[in-house]
Length: 546
Image (cartoon, one colour):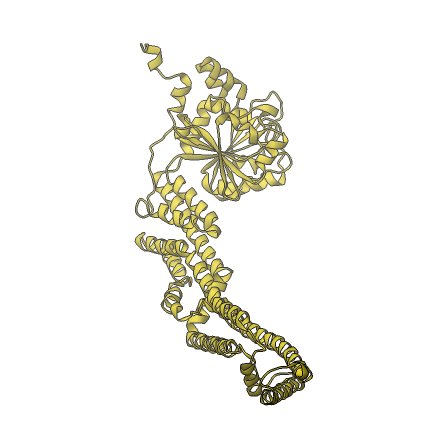
């Protein structure tokens, strides 16, 4: 059963509920237009950082106050965050020194997401923040390698109204991410020792002032006679609020009104309410950031068109479009040349496969010139002598008797010499066939390779340009959105600049698709060549039989 005390807010909750929080949202275009543009840009590697910037604008278009937290290594800034939230969130080892950038925001499901510069993300529990924030172990240093920031989601009532952008505790020089500076509306600088006024500190104060970011120095109550921040014209331009972190801690533990008053929590919460932008001003800020994003996107598109892989791929397809008739004529000539070489292979096959007996060989040798002419003449002379002796032998000797062995041996000797010459010519023809086939095969492969290179080059260029389709779509969506917004001098200027970015490569892709079928080289060439080569060499069977 719920008792009466459980229905009441604590004194801490009563105070944070006093912060002005009339939520509103800036709508740029239709509800999902920006999300669609951002989604398209995320699909291409080189525009992911631009997509990330747009995602920040989409996220920031919800009106919650964004406050930057700054402090050196002695400021106990992480302890301040815990006490402000009245909950242990940030690690407090080493006086609460933080080593990373963190965004602490509201969410129903609590957790930590680590965002790395390469676009990778990793999820952790709230109890694992110390892996990044304070731990000096080797594994923690590895975890922080390449880390952009931590996204810390906490289910806390105050964070429905305020998002905290925590910066690393600094020693000799303070540095704040540019996107943190562009996203916040106010800053709290935690000071608990004499402010050093380092060049980087003064530079950051000047930058905050120039960009109309409200700042409060949260100065720890001190017993020192000298103030922690000098009373000079420069520092007097900024609000200073005396604050007691120790009393805030005691007030949270005891839920004590007097202690809350003494620590000046009410004044800090009033500062948050006062610096919150009006709806009109907030709209102006978000629209301005969107226009700045469009300017960045235009510069990114211009850069893409001037560098590879876009520039090279565009140039290849543009050359094909301008000289496509020359391309096609060249391919037709190559095809005709290949067809002619293939016919030569067929002719060689027919010629050499007919050389199965000595008579056919002799006929071939008499009709074709080969390199070793003296040897061929010798073979033909032997063939002529053999045929003459054989005819003479047959006329004189119908049968072979013992006393006729001498004549037979003489004939046999001529026959053996002829057979030996046949074997030599057989090898000679074998090598001749081999050389001719290899030459033709290499010639066909050379033509085919050259032609295929041109085809593959065009195919790759087409594929590379097609990969930019999401970016082109994002450009068209952005152009449409600018036209739908209330026309101003700035929006009109951006519209003209975006229109003038030459990112119209689709006509080149369409032209290539219409003509690529004309750029084909027979793919079965190699297989046919090898088949003919094998058939010829296997079937050359020369016989000494007449």
